[in-house]
Structures are given as structure tokens and as C-alpha cells.
Image (cartoon, rainbow, N blue to C red):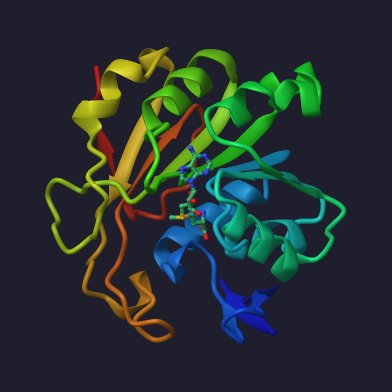
Length: 228
Ligand SMILES: C[S@@+](CC[C@H](N)C(=O)[O-])C[C@H]1O[C@@H](n2cnc3c(N)ncnc32)[C@H](O)[C@@H]1O
């Protein structure tokens, strides 16, 4: 099945466990416009927290030139994801936890990865030690060109966006090279039906934070956050 984002058709995954097609990235059309624009320039897409494979499948299937990687700690989720995804040439998934998965990326690919443009979807959390601070610390000290999307983030000025308690105050000490980075959060109308999965799943929009070395296209949907 295909869905349209920004006047273009994209394949989405069929979840064999739930017998339905599933959209990626919470189907927030505002965020997806920014994400797709970043992906069009990226050499790598790195996800932490594969879950059932919805997002990794979407990126790998629709962006065949991007090398995609995801890791999962939970065997049950990993097996479902593998079954949902099947085989895609440009996607590697591993049953391994983050941040160790990130620490090993240059061994899976090669050291050029540190200089290539990477879109990170940081989404590994659950009943485990939260890897977020270690992930941010490692990425911002080792990689040169990246846009990190941290999912489930607290938007301090808009409580309609749901979150898992991740805050900018908590991650700031782990952001390295701050003077080379821009940090953003969404500033669009969080009650707008296009920014959530209201039509397809029915949950409110999910907060996120973007940390980037690049001049990304914000479409006026993002507010810059001062971290210095
Ligand atoms: C919110 S879900 C991810 C959703 C997925 N990224 C997507 O966009 O569809 C979080 C996943 O992270 C996994 N997880 C939790 N801690 C982890 C860790 N340290 N390393 C890797 N995966 C982890 C959980 O088992 C769960 O499947």
C-alpha cells in the first residue's frame, strides 16, 4: 500500500501481526515534511529502537540509496519486525542494545560514516536503562554531519505534544560541540489534524527535538532553542 506525503507516493509496511498497514513517524505530516527533506540528502538513516519495524521499513523501502540501520533490545519485537520487513538490501537490523549499537556502527560500515550525512531517529526506550544521554554524547562528539530527531520529547511550551519525560535540560550536559549545532522543537498548531495520526490511529501528536549540524529546511514549523 502507498500513502502520499508532499505530493509523492510512499510504500508503508504491512504489520502481519496486526493485519494492517502502518504509517511511520506517528504520521505527523509537519514533521514528515522536514524528515523527508533531510532524508533526501542523507547517506545513512540510523534508528535506535526498531520496535515492529514501521519506521525503518519506510525509510529503507522508499529511499533505496540510503544505508539504513536499526537495533532492538527485545527479541519478541525484533522477530515481529523481521517478519514484517522481510528482506531489504539497504537495511540492517540487529538484536543488540543501544548505545552499544551506535558504538559499533563504524565496524559494520566503515570510518567514513563519521563524515557522511546521517539522519538519526533516536527512539530506544522502554523498560531498560535509558540510553538517550549516552547516545547524544556519542553522536555529538564523533559524527560530523547529522540531523538527530529525538522522539517522545517534552515541548515545554505546548503540553498537547505527548512525551516520555525527555527534556532539553536533561540532555544539554551531554550535547558536545554546542557551538556547531542548532536545536529545534515544533512550533505548529498541535491541534491541527495533520500533525498527528488522528485520521489513521487517533492519538495526539508526539513531541520531538531536533539537533543538527546542517541548515535544515524548517518550513516555518520549528522554533530554534538556545542551548548555549
Ligand atoms: C517507541 S518504540 C520504537 C518505535 C520505532 N522507532 C518506530 O518508529 O516505529 C521503542 C523500542 O525501543 C526498544 N528499546 C528499549 N530500550 C532499548 C535499547 N537500550 N536499545 C535498543 N532498543 C531498545 C523497545 O524494546 C521498543 O521496541
